[in-house]
Image (tube, rainbow, N blue to C red; front, side, top):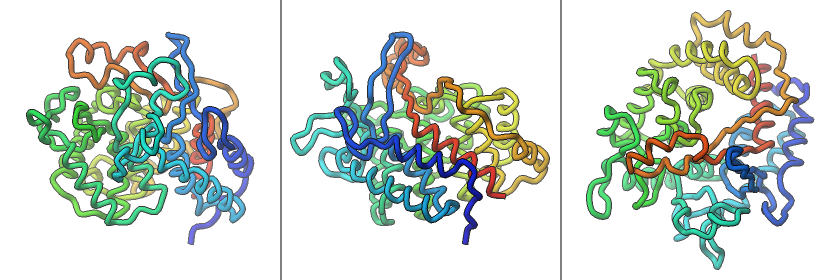
Length: 381
């Protein structure tokens, strides 16, 4: 039985998170956590009704729930119940067991892509297919049995790298050449969407499969070959946009690896645990403040749960640091969309990393969840 973490500001953080959950308004249905997409270069900011942040918040809160008081557990259960009521609106338009970032066009409802906007939501071209990231997070935060997870695994093989397309075998183009032969899982379920490997989304997907203890197949092996390769070759540090286009920073990639390896011993990745810890310590020297330091501290603690020989002093140092002052407002973008990143045209792929072509999402409730997670991780020992 886990011991509840001592109360510091935990109560107030959880109450603040609960207060930010929508009660229903013109932009955000009841149970959704509001987020906003923006591009400061274009002076663009819009309310965005997506399921990604809501499912992510619910996932982390339920990971933390067993360390909290019974009163706070009840708050999280209420938050969860309200949140998952929104999942059906994001389910595949044909009723399949996959999920979309935005509301899907079904039951007489129009597609909710680029919600709250004026132009993009009118264009079918900008409607994206269902994806593995939202699907995995939805499966992890509502009752989903092993049979459903096995169905998803079979479905993913139809959209993996080197799977057959309408006219030919589809192969990933926007990755390093030495990964193009891997039959890894792609971010997208759409048949007309380019194949894409995103390390963070893949960590969320593999977390789901590890949770259900599904037997490994060749697609899992190749997905893990990609994930281990980007660590071994330092590509997740030197080229984070290439390895995780929708997250695109080394701290966020490490954080997702740490979520997976904090709860599971993954044979394909265990050899890289020490390197991930070393790289996290290096990044902590670069990120002295702000949310990046919060998630790096959390990553260090989670990575070290299942083996940290030789890193005891560094971890003790992290634990001894006072809680970071997060009252200041500094931009932190957990998720982004590179509007040109999905195209296979070489010119557009060259322009894809430019910030002016990106949409960035902010979510106040999610930042509070990351702070709560950090606080609880630091008090567990």
